[in-house]
Amino acid sequence: MSPVPAPARLPSRAPGPSRTDATPARPSTPRSTPARPDATRPRLRLVDNTRLEIAARRRRARRSLVVAGVLAVAALLALAGVNAVLVSNQVRLDELEQQVVEAQARHQALRLEVATLEAPARVVSTATDRLGMVTPERITYVQPSPVDAPSSAEGLAPSPGSTSSEVPVGTATVPSWGTVKPYLSR
Image (cartoon, rainbow, N blue to C red):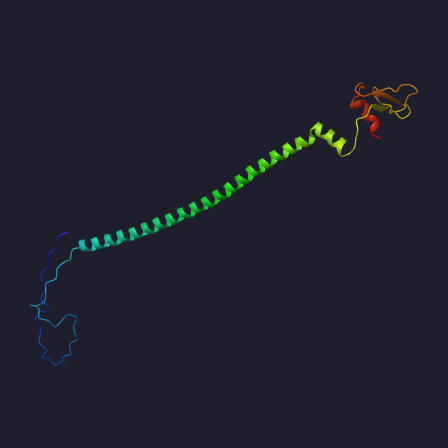
């Protein structure tokens, strides 16, 4: 924008009637203009706004830069906080995974111990060594009398006049569970 020349000044006061009339002169009020003579007064001119616009742009740029800096610092702090939470959760997760591995190893060891304790050879050796049990020479099966047998008994008909039978070990046939169960449920 180029400066526009100021318009020519108007005279300060046109000559008028003198005050020699009967009206008294009023004291003059001080003017807001300086008491300098008109010849030494500088001419007024318009100031272009380019310097003001540039200063305003610089202020806006500074504000924008400060806001962007504050936002960048806040974003970095938030990122650091999230990262710290992730690291602490990862440490907790690693601890839990280690506990799971230890628990699985203990579970496997206990399963092996149970399998070892349930082994038939161990059960027989414990029964004979600790409890003093012996293998019988004969197995005796006791059969109920016809008076004690329930009416719905299937199979297993007792022999007349016999309440028990002796069979040598290894040669006995064992009745099925379904035929023995009704006798045991009383």
